[in-house]
Structures are given as structure tokens and as C-alpha cells.
Length: 260
Image (cartoon, rainbow, N blue to C red; front, top):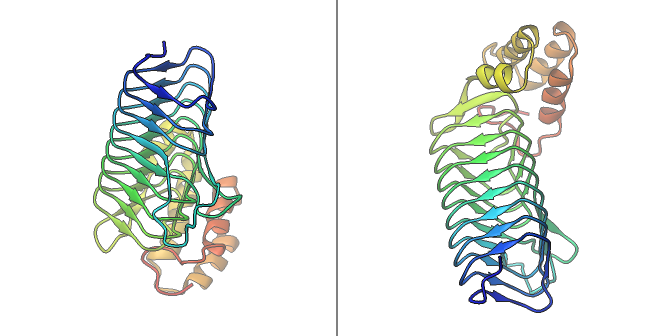
């Protein structure tokens, strides 16, 4: 159902079984895949490419021009996958420079008032709580959970299976599999419950992840030495290798550590 009271630019490409409610606005150069629902007063703007089975709620602005002083009007894109829920008053900016993209994967929940800034990349199965904001060029890996009113500073990365508690401010990378809390943000333990329940990680691997983070945060050694000890004493697994690679490739450093 497409309401005659919605505005749809003639150049927009609308898939099959799409519902567009009254007073929605669909801009030029937009693609909306099959089985999507666009609620009243939602705005889908120039450069947005949306997959299937997405729902965009009232007053969301999807594909807004970037809030970046370097933006000069380039034709850029916002790419959204499938099965995403974008709740009321969410703002998602497209990229800043020609050829670049802001990207949202599949099966994400962006709750009321979330702002995803330019050139940010969100993986799959993530939850961004009410009022959470990312600055530009952030990366949020699969299955991360950001609580309400979290702020992620420019260029930071959030690891998979990480839970960032309400109100945290992250100005460094938050490594995978942990719970991050407090301000200044700090390591609060590993996210064992969700990993075992949702990801079916074995108890032995969860124990290894806990041992790895004890080396990093509780042994009083440098991060470089902690990584060497992790490689020496902890059995290899995909989770441990991802943890090591995440930290070794961190440009900003990780939370709670002053030395990289």
C-alpha cells in the first residue's frame, strides 16, 4: 500500500509489497527493497539504498546530508541491508566524499533518537539504545549492544559481543566480548552471559577470553607484553585471534589503557 498522501519522487525505485504511509517523503535517487514499511513523516533521502524487510518509523531521517564541514555536496550513499528496525526520530547521515558510504548491515535495531553519523559502518545484529550517538567514521562490529545515551567519538570501533552500558562516552576503541561501564569508560568484565546464550561459545573459550582480559587489564604489565603472554599461554581459537587482531590494529588504542 502506497498512500497518495505520501511524496515519492518519480525517479525513486520502490520494490514489491512496500507500504508507504501518508506524509512520508521519498527523495530522488532512492532505492527501497521489497516488503519494507515506511511510516508517516519518515524521510528517505537522496543516496539511500535500502534492502528488504526494513521498517522505518515516524520522523526518522534516513540518508541525511552529513554534519561534516568537509562536505561540499558530493553524491554519496547510505547503504542499508535487510530486516532492520529504525525507530522514531533516528537520523542516519550518508557519507561525506564521493564514492564513500555509510553502511548499516542486517537485523539491526536502532531505537528512538539514535544518530548514526557520516561514514559510520554498523555490522549485523546490533542494538543501539535510545538516544545513542556515533560520530563520523565509527565502526560497530556484529552483535554489539550500545545502551541508552551512549556516545561514540569520531573514528572509534566497538568490538563484537560487546555491551556498552547506558551513558558511557567512548573516545577509544572498545574491544570485543566485554562489558564496558562508567565514565571515564572502563573494562567491567566479559560479556559471558550473552556469548554463551546467544553465540553458543563453549565454557572453555569463555574462560580463555576472561584469562586474556586479565592479562590486559589486571596484571599490571604493558599492553604489548599482555598480548605476547596471551599468544603464549592461551589456546588458539577464532575468538582469541579476533581479540588479538582487534587490539593490534587499533589506531586509537583501547579503553582503559594509556599505552599501545
